Each structure stands twice: as structure tokens, then as C-alpha cells.
Image 1 (cartoon, rainbow, N blue to C red):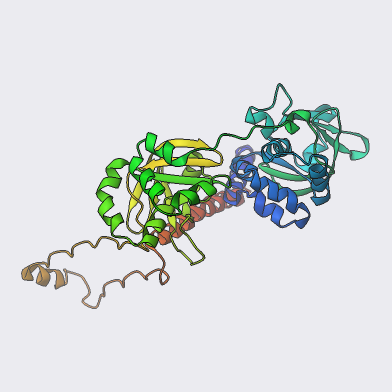
Image 2: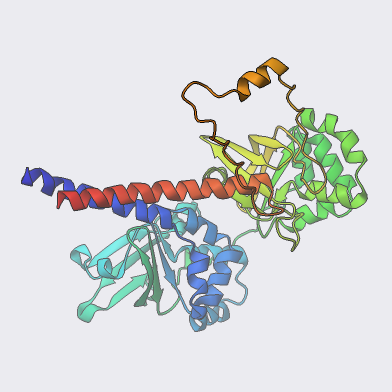
Length: 408
């Protein structure tokens, strides 16, 4: 019996650690924001869209450099484009976990590890690998070429064994990563939509003042757009024509999120999101993203639309086809359901009469309390869903901890 307990204990500990890790997750932008000395590095992780890629990875190590080191990098390469800078910074993101302890326990004193630059497909040969070497007196160095090496300074943040943020003394240097990169061709968004089954929506974008320009100006910073199918747009046109000019613009801008979301991000990132129509007003022109298995839905208090396909999914732009027009509560009222028919008088008396053995003093349960004033139903559902998910993790972790106590 004692031997079985000893065998069970490590598995329960692993289970507990797994659920704690899953509940935490990681956000590289938020982590670095707590350390102002990395503000320039953090800014360019966001500008190059590497931050999103880092957050999507389950196991990752970020080699961060402070503001003086970033200034030296930008001064040494004054003509470096944002695309080349993305390659160079992706060389600072290792696709494996290296905490401070692991760095000093390298097998043979060194390790060759792949980076996001290698994973991008733009690195020739093995130019996207970084060599880590542990020297005497505990000095650890990182190098991407024979030109230079950067020393380990300190550990900034560690979430074993998912995320490690490490400070290194200087930016890594690599001729392959620093090579000029041709900017990708600008996507004609409305032409793409018109060719792929969303001609009516594309036509409204082109014909509505400021709509098409607002979509286009947000692409470089990240954009996720949803275009309704023709079958959904045509019956909606009379409603659209009855809107004011501001209402028409808001309706179209409501069909885009000013952040790039891949299909996988939409499947795992359920919750309330802002749209291009959102201003500083709380809960103004927001959407709720939810998924059921592989099916992703977009919910408003008026409509529920399902993503039916993908037109383009290339960071920083994603465009998806949906089966319904997204109608915001700011412009449309939810459909009212007809009240149920009154029960016959005899049925009412029968329902009111107490059953055998039932106390006549029993009272009906009070109605469930309403949500916060002004809170849309879809946002309340998202909040409840998130609370349930966290509760499940905590319950399972508590069960594992209780089992450990019993075993011990």
C-alpha cells in the first residue's frame, strides 16, 4: 500500500502543476510592461506582431535586451525596415524553455536551439539557430553567428516550463536576419472580399465614406474582418438603407476587430472584444467570441453569426466569412419573443392547489438577480463562462491537492 502511495504522489503533483500553469497563461507585453528598462524592446515586439506569436506558444524563451542595447542596435542599422527588424527580433525568441537553472546545467556545457526566425521559413539553412554555451564561473553566452556573443544578465520572469524571459547584455547579430526584406504587397481588401463571395458587403465598404479607408489603415497594425455572405446581406439591405450615415459607418466598422486573430486564436480566446466601431464608452459596439469545438461564433444581443470560412489569414490580416450580418444593440433591438398563451382556468386552479404532502407555506423561488445595469446579455454570458472555466480548474486542482493530503 505504501509503495502505491509513493507511485501516485508524483502524478498528483504533476496534475496540480499542470492546472496551475494552464490557469495562469502568459502575456509577454504585460510582463515586460512591469520592467520599464525593456520598453523599447517591448514596443517593437508589438509593432512587429511577434508579441502575439510569443503568447500563442506554449513553450518559449525570450532573450530581452534593455533600452540602451536596443538604441545601439537601431543606431548600428539606421535603415533597418520593420520587416527586417522582425526577423532580427525573432532570433531572440527560442522555441524551448531555458530558465536560469537549466542554463547552468546544459549537457556538455552547450546547446543549439531553434528560434522563431528559423520557424518563419525565412532563415537560410541553420541561420535561425542560436548557440548557448555555459563557461567557467557560471558565465552563459548566446550567439547567432561568429560575429559576436551576448552574455546572460538575469532572469526576468519564469513560468516553468512554459515561458522564460531572460535579459542578455546586447542584441544578437546575424547577417541573415539583418538582410533587407521586401515588404509584402498591399492587399486590396474590398477586391478580395468581392472575389470570394462577399461582393455586397465589399460594395457597401467602398460606397460608405471613411469605411474602406478605416479598414485599410488598420491592416498594418493588425486587423480581423468578418464579411457576411451574399445570402445574408441581400435581405439585410432594407435595414441598412434606413440607418443614418453615422449608423451605416458604425455597422460596417462593427465587422472588424483592430487586432490580428488567427483561427486558432479565435478558438481559444473566447470573450468580449472591441471592434473598429468601439469608442471610449464602456461596452460600446463590442462583440463576444465563443466557440463550440471547431465552430466559432460571434455574438451580439441581437444576432449570433458563425464563421463559415477563411478568405485570408496572414499576420497582420485575417478575413473570415460569416453567415449573418452582425447587428449591434446600439443600432438594433433584440427580437421580442411572443408571450406564452395563458393556461386554461382549470389548469391554473390545479397548478395552484398544493400536492399531497406539500406544505402550503412553501413559496416560489425568487427570480435570479439581473446583471449589472446596462450590461449586455452576451457580455454577461462571457463573464459567467470565464468564471465557470476558472472554477473548473480550481476545483480540479483542489481535488488533486486533497488527494495528495490523503495519500500522505
